[in-house]
Image (cartoon, rainbow, N blue to C red; front, side, top):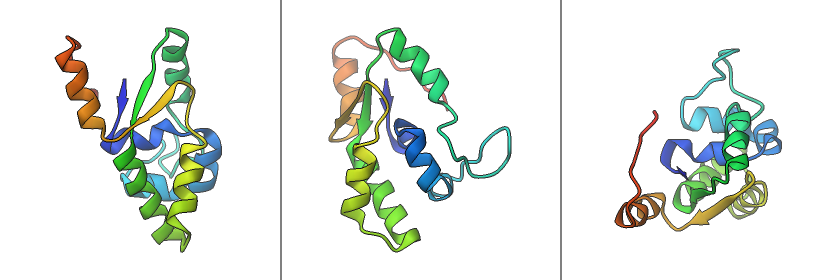
Length: 119
């Protein structure tokens, strides 16, 4: 499963959401469906954990991760490189960073996998 573009922020643990949830929500105009405000946890973690138990691995877009780090750094007057390291150090189980999510998708298609967009 590839987490890219607007889904990249869901590749990170609750610790990241607790610290940067407001900025992550703002970067993608995402609010917690239950509360209507910026999430403080990864609202899809339980669903992703189910997939991990099924053996799913996650390709996480590194370009989007850098974009998120840059956005957070600007919002919080932080250091982009440090935030990037923090993000990649707090990825969900079975996450593997790929240079660009779209390339991972294309490679999967070349090997016979199909795409199902859930948006």
